[in-house]
Amino acid sequence: MADFDLIIIGGGPAGLTAGLYAARANMNAVLLEQKGLGGEILNTDLIEDWPGEESITGAALAEKMAAHAAKFGLRVEIKGVKQVWSNGDLKVVDMEDGTRHTAIAVIVAVGGEPTKLGVPGEQEYHGRGVSYCAVCDGAFFRNMDLAVVGGGDSAFQEGLFLTRFAKKLYVVHRREEFRAQAILQDRLLSMDKVQAVTPAVVKAIGGDADVKWIDVERNGKTERIDVEGVFIFIGFKPVGRYLFQKEHIEHDPNGYIVTDQYMRTNVPGVYAVGDTRAQLAKQITTAVGDATTAVLHAERYIEELKHRRLVAAG
Ligand code: NAP
Picture 1: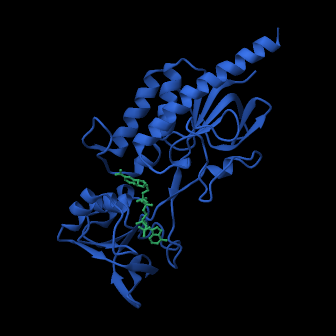
Picture 2 (picture 1 turned 180 degrees about the vertical axis):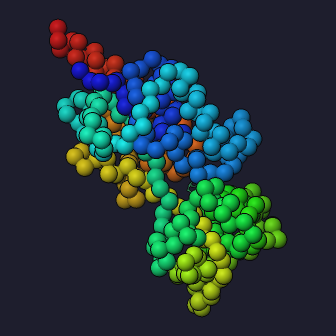
Picture 3 (picture 1 turned 135 degrees about the horizontal axis):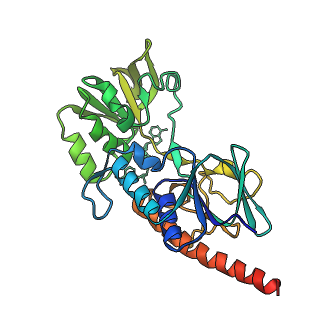
């Protein structure tokens, strides 16, 4: 007998949506999250592409999603998960505190983490001028010259937030063209205090006790830019791999879990959703869509398995 029908690992938008659907379907489900509920959106200032909300902070949306799932009775445990493995039809979830839950199906919604530049000074100055979260750290940099590194939506979205504090903001990107949405590019680059530095590759971050400069290579020459904060947004990498030391789950070459259109992995009863899954769009809207599909499929899978067991038991 499994402890639960369904275990959801991760409490970001994907996990909370899976939890909402599972709770509304009256499934015997639990959501396990190691930190606070909300996931990556807690590191986002404004969200403007969540239908129905023209503009909402990441923290407010996270709170709304968590409250919504809680209203329908979702059980949440704040616990780190160590690994997931199969014992026949049973899924076993080992927790970091040594406890264990079992379930018929598991939905993995653990998201990812920011990619690191990997240049000298980055690690040394992390927390002393190097940051991966404008919302968390931006206010410490009031009236200072800052740099954002990256050319995607995150760099531009978070760069816009940083303009509230920065005296000057450099947008340092390795190519001439940015990949961020045009509307974000227009908004940020049209501001007087914002200067694009392209095509420029960050080579080093340095200073004294705190960051004071970055060295960038542009047109074959190294240039020093004086800044007191460096906000790095050069992508995102999934973090789910550590969960599967005992079980082979198919990942793509970038470390994302491979699924079919029902969010099924190669292991029956294990689903992957949101930013940890191989898919094109890392969006809240696609994460919640993934989660909806996964729960609806998992429900069928769980019922079928229970029915088979009843038949086998005579
Ligand atoms: P991203 O779209 O993958 O962009 C990463 C940026 O960093 C690219 O411009 C890339 O340059 C650059 N880069 C990558 N590796 C680098 C390196 N080693 N050194 C220097 N630059 C490097 O990542 P993201 O902006 O974090 O966004 C991740 C996903 O979340 C995307 O799908 C994005 O659309 C989504 N997102 C959406 C919103 C929204 O408002 N809807 C907000 C945030 C994120 P190249 O362009 O040269 O490859």
